[in-house]
Length: 335
Image 1 (cartoon, rainbow, N blue to C red):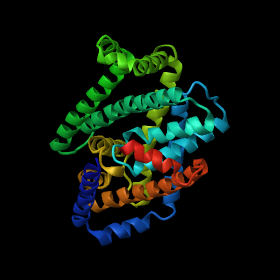
Image 2: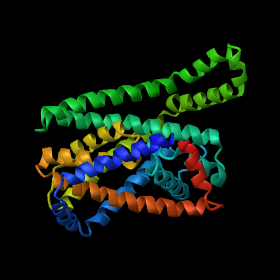
Image 3: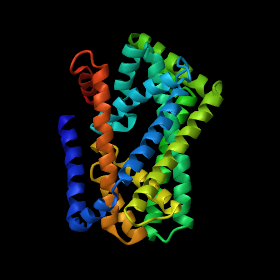
Image 4: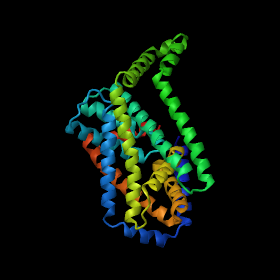
C-alpha cells in the first residue's frame, strides 16, 4: 500500500504544479490580499457547517442526548477525525476508526453503536450530497452558459455517483451483507466465521432500525446534511464576494457541485491536493473568465482547511493518554 500512497500523493502534487504553472501567480497573490478580514467570515461559516454536520451525526447515536454538552463533545470528536482524514488517502470515511476509538474510550459508546452511527452518518451525508448535486446539475444544464463539455461531465459523473450511493444504500436497507453471511455460514469455511457473521447481523439490524423505525431521525439527519452542502455553496459565495468579484448564489451552487463531483472521483488523493485547485481554476474561468480568481478561491479554502487541521490535531491531544495513541489508530486505518 505504501507505494500506492506515494503515487496518489505524487498525482496530487503533479496536479497542483500543473495548476500553478498555468496561473498568473502575482495576480493570484494580489487577489488573495483582497480577502482581508473576510477570511474570518469564511471560518465562521465553516464552523457553523461543522456544528450542523455534528448535529446530523448525533441523530444516528441513540445513546446520546440532545444537549449542548453532548453536541460540543461530538463536535470535538468530529474535528479530530476530520483532521486525520484530511491527511490520509481514501479519507471519504472521515477518519472513522479514530472517531470510533474516541467514542469508546472517552465516552463509553460501544464500538457496535459507534460503527453503526458512522456508517449511517456517511450514508445520510452521501444521500444528501446526491440531492444537492441534483440541484447543481439541473442548474448547469438549464441555467448556465457553461460549455457542452461541462454538461457532459456533470451528467456522467452525477449518474455514476448516484448509482454507487444507491447501491450502498440498498446493501444496508435490504441486509445484503447478512444474506451473504448466511450463505457463507452454510459452507464449511463459513462456520469459522460464525462470530463475525453474528456481528454483521447485529450491525444490519441497527441500520434497518434507523431506516425503518427511526424515520424522524433519518429525515432530520438528511435535512441537516443537506443544509451543510448549501453552506458550502454559501462559503464560495462569500469567498468571491470578499475577493472583489461577486458571483450569484446560483453560480456558487454550480461551482460547489463541480468541485464535489471532481472530489468524489479523486477521493484517493490526500486532501484532494491539486484536484480542488484544478477544478476551481477551470470552472471559474468558464463562469467568470478569470482562472487566477479560481486559484485564489481554492487557496483560501486551503487556508481554512489548514486552520481546521491544526485545530483538530490540538483537540486530539486532549484524547491521547499516550503521545501517539491516535497516530497508531490512523496508521491502522491506512494499512
